[in-house]
Length: 405
Image (cartoon, rainbow, N blue to C red; front, side):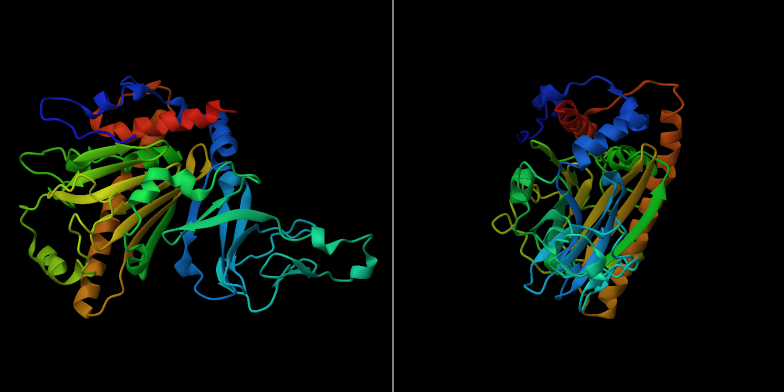
């Protein structure tokens, strides 16, 4: 259900969502081993997970491998001879060895196990068994790679490790997926850049940091100053929140009157708006700046459980948070740009990468410290304010999965 716009008479966003409550949130979900194991079983092994983009598989035989510690598996994704993208558990049917060890590449023939030489086709079928005559009643048709449900949306590759998913990808994404249809993901994805790191922090501690702009005026005041704030919006309060069944969106204010530094001016002049799309209300996807506010700057699309896609005009950012333990996470931060046509455009992109890197380092500086103190036991609860609505929404959705059994 989408929230109405916040009124100017003191109404808070939580007033539109009384089902979320306004009380403290328990710390246990951030530190408990038992809670993490329930998340593994009842969330990550049941829902659709974004693991890549189609640009990673442009040609027949192209593949990549995605380790999913939170699901205790490794996933092999390959574009077959028929052009279809398929996904499999990356496991040989003989003795269980990991079939493909590389992160990615092109398979021109068969995927061959390095242990005993069993080989599989791009469709997952078992093609060759070494010394086959010495096996007993071997039925190769039943020994194919174990398939994993896979589907694509706007060029993103999603998988679901549940052997019998209860719903398709589009049904799972619902309104947030429909709202982003038509955004030029494929054009902007021509020039991706990614940072990855392991943090000693629960995955939700990291996710929480990118679901609100409340921290911007404090943590990022030296890096980006008042880009998302002004004299009339000192704390970067959001223009709009939209909450859906599982997912959510926040639209941020942009300070058009901010005076950029000389290097920022140069970067913006030659490096931004590389795609000259018409972002008029008539041609903008309905889920991008849904209120059509002229002061809009960027939307954060929060796809449950662990995917955050921030879209603006000409670029988009993405965070993927892969739990490794109750207090350890693999954090992937992606930034996507269109292919540059000039050196000046390339400079603009490189400068933007530096700013993004510095922002990530500032965010990262708080996360392990937060985790260590959550685990101290000094407090049992945290408190949230109105602009942290999406954090509260996450806890509600997570509890619905964990309590469903």
